[in-house]
Picture 1 (cartoon, rainbow, N blue to C red):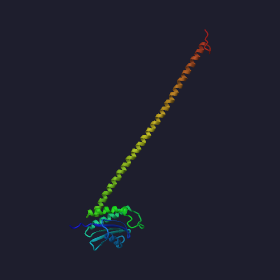
Picture 2 (picture 1 turned 90 degrees about the horizontal axis):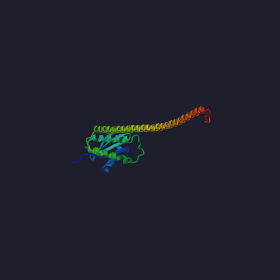
Picture 3 (picture 1 turned 60 degrees about the vertical axis):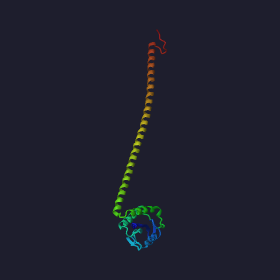
Picture 4 (picture 1 turned 180 degrees about the horizontal axis):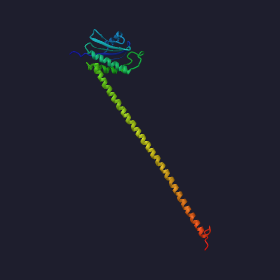
Length: 225
């Protein structure tokens, strides 16, 4: 049974310095890709046919090379889609970063797993084109936007709940304040009423005293017959 054509190796480099790569193969394939970096033309996209039945494709942009080795019979449109997808992912991840002082394969730890995902996806989906990838990206962006909108909605709800809770707390504090004020007013009124009653009793007693004095014609309550 003839083995299905597939992608062999993926390599990203700055100039001739490899930054990250992924392959399920070792040895000569990796060495060949590293050697072919010397033939990469600046800001060009091209393919290089090898004598061993493989083809190397690359995209160079701003001195960053995205290079892929595949079986010569592997669908070229899938190769192009794969390289474009890797380039977009890389540029999105490292926008504005300078790799002049980066050591060889210095990005493997943080970016190799993404290359592995591309490697596996495009090997399993030979025939996938840039249009298919664009559709997938659109769906992913829509999903991302939906998630962001849901998060914003949740945030708005949380803010509304916090505002309502704050208003309820303020109303409760106002209610307590009014209650305390009412109690103080009531106490003040009660004191006023007590003093008013005392004053009335005093006045009544004073009136009685004067009446008695008038009747007895004396201020010592010694009435004459």
